[in-house]
Image 1 (tube, rainbow, N blue to C red):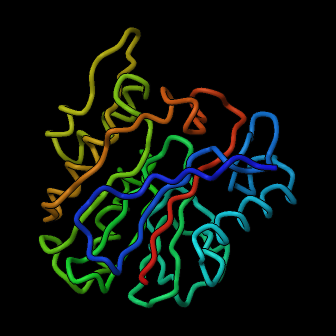
Image 2: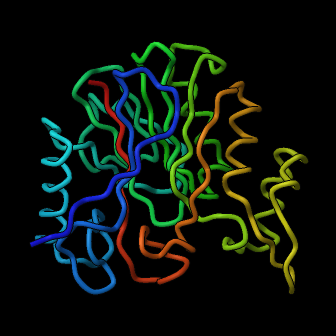
Length: 246
């Protein structure tokens, strides 16, 4: 017997045709550091447990087909989910087709949900610091036919301010792109910095023309009952973010 699955539904004014949510760690069958709704098949969990967890999510959400699971590589490739093969190396997926579910896996990185105001186009991006610095936000926005100022964005659960320590090298990468990025970093001891990944993402989105940006209130590292966190636990599971058109 498993506990009930718990989902965090995107809090944004998306059209009814757009369904967007993130899973929590509750409700699955995985054990130990993966307890209990681990959806990542690359973190050392038992394959049969991951398969069962994914089946539970599909059944609970009445998804007709398997979500398009990617091989995330912290890059900028954003694929067409309707035509790509499962396991494609990419860090984002876009579709304008009904019945196709875009998915990314995270355990501190930032899932970025995007849709147009008409509810005909959607995308989901995996925003780790490397991908954000390389331009995954910009690559995702360019997939849309609608201009950026007609899009809606929801920032899903990620590691929050005060918990994401990075080195000077990471800070320099972002400042080289935009001096305003300095506002997203606070100094720590010994050349370390606290990075606000939500703020960095917002800066990138606004610079690319997006205006309607929501979310950003969770912290995967601090909210241990809700979320897996690689920074907090090391060996751990993965949540899934999912978006599809009804």
